[in-house]
Image (cartoon, rainbow, N blue to C red; front, side):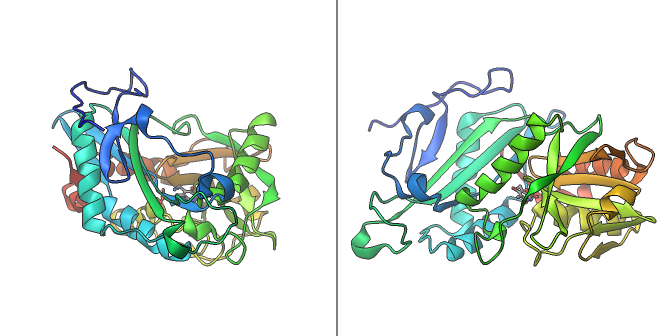
Length: 325
Ligand code: PMP
């Protein structure tokens, strides 16, 4: 295929442009040409993993900062081990491919980056083995303009889902495995159809896990509480960020322990966090107001700080922001 050049600038207003570049198995090609066979193993069986990374546009500096890209690719490399994906790229190589992609896209608005590592063979049968080279590993990375994934201002009304979380010894949520997002899809869809903004999923023993595609914090008596990473959640990078920011900047400790469903109904504040969700306050759970039913002070100050940090506006945390240009 002839080498392509990508001169146009992609903006949020334009939406997703199919002639924009993406990375697909070793080269940069147009998004519309990056196609996989209907026989692809990952399409049949969900045998792939992915990441969601955000780039934040800093208008004053005319700079794009990618938030905690190293941690995202560390997680991706770890998750490759779970699914026996043979990815022949180092973390540094993955970062440099991503930076090259964003340089080609030249975005001037917030951008979402989606790497996928997947079983690319066209064999029948779910084995993850690459026997005789017939089930190799594919890598794709695309980037699109993205604003808020959830409303970050109004205060969300969420429900406790009737679906329970997939478990570590079934389809590990830690793995960010494509197929495991059927669990997310069922939970989120039912929540929307029932008039809620999103859902909180419980483990099969009835404890709080996380949101459909984000981690969850609650506030009780001035202290943050969140679920442990060994309780069937994704090991969220935003979760880690919030724990660190709360401690360093506001002297608020996070207690990590099992959370009962009914603690959701009596807590003072609650919020979702994640790369997509950012920091999204929750003001109502299962028709019960959270605290006084308004966005709480701890959620608000953490959200304000988070938005400054991700845009590279806090010198102390600029170590987390990789400048593209
Ligand atoms: N849990 C799930 C199920 C998710 O899909 C996500 C989004 N990646 C998160 C939590 C939040 O993780 P992170 O902060 O690393 O984006």
